[in-house]
Length: 266
Image (cartoon, rainbow, N blue to C red; front, top):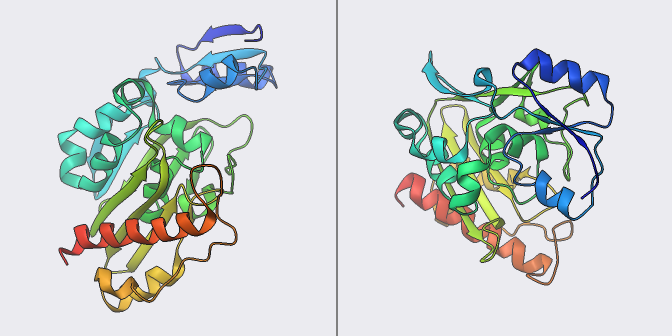
């Protein structure tokens, strides 16, 4: 691990000021991705700005059809929250499936979204529900936020402060986890309301993406059988020692069908 200066920010302003003052600084919340990256010497920040203790970045609330979750809220808190379970049960379930108990007790929602790992769980929920990512400077809808492999619309001096989730319709999440890491080899989050159906796939490609053909098919008939004739295009999907492109394409379809069956009861 390379040497760095550690700063425990007490306020959002202190964190922002430090980030502006040091161009090579990195934010630390749960550290579930950053710490292993540092240990492997794959990153060399000059400063680590710990924002995990800032109370303004924590908390869960429900108001006027919007579920607001602070960026520093840990996965286990989302999974166990009675408010989340009532408002968006699929989101609470998703949080309960992240990694392992150690990861769920340290990792944060904001950290996961900012990192945008192609196999992370939260991005699929955010994209399917078109959540709004709130930062210290602006608000970004999920459709505009995710921009590919470990890339988002965030500027270098921008900090996620909260995520607002619309409480409308029904949703469901299913994934096939890697047996060692718990990351999704393929996962599908399906959301359905009066405006239509959105299907977000994680784990299968270089970044989270919407499966438009599945959305169109489910818009006509909310039933897993509506997906039978579809085949997700495999050309741009991930391939490694754990699975071919074609395997992941089929796995994404299977997970989508399972999510639809859970959502529709059919």
